[in-house]
View 1 (tube, one colour):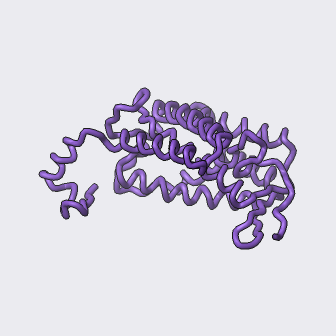
View 2 (tube, rainbow, N blue to C red):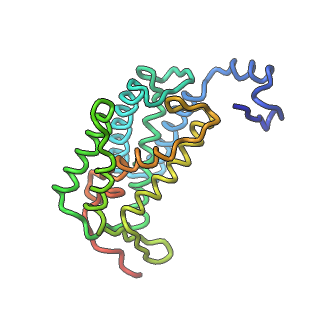
View 3 (cartoon, rainbow, N blue to C red):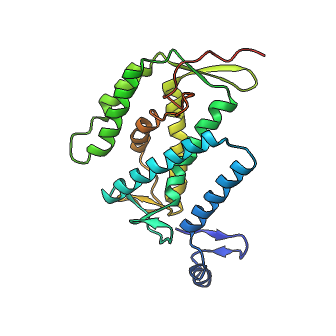
Length: 245
């Protein structure tokens, strides 16, 4: 893939620039990892995130890293660039990609005073969450049940609405909110693959990410939960709607 350096005014395909980039002391994946650690520390120092939110983000990070280890081993995608901070071929910055989703959701729920109602019974959401994650891993060997799970999310969360405040109070169907969130993540995935940060199986840098990936990641996104019961995406318990000020 070609690129352009505003500092040097020439493309990365230029042999001289390529030699210069190859001589950098820090590669892209390690730079992203160190940058993410620094940003997270600054968020806590300047109290832009609470420690309870940080604990949730750590859980997202650990869960995301386990998912990355499994999926790269299964050949679903790969990280073609080298890195120092990596675990079994998976650069550690990848966990922060999952954690950033959790960070955004936790902060948006607090800042926008999000409430979810009517929230379905806990046994239904837990059973659906187990089924989604089992299929996420097991579909490599067993029949893929994602279409049944899509229908199940509609059945379980179809009546639920998310109430949130911007300049005034708004509401949106929760399944629509989850789908739109996934759509923006799909756009971000195209940026990641277009820059060669990671690549899906059989994909070249110039290839767009398949639309099927929207559905693949919609299901896990639909089950994100916030541990202190304020909830996330489709995982919050019902609370009172935001009241007009």
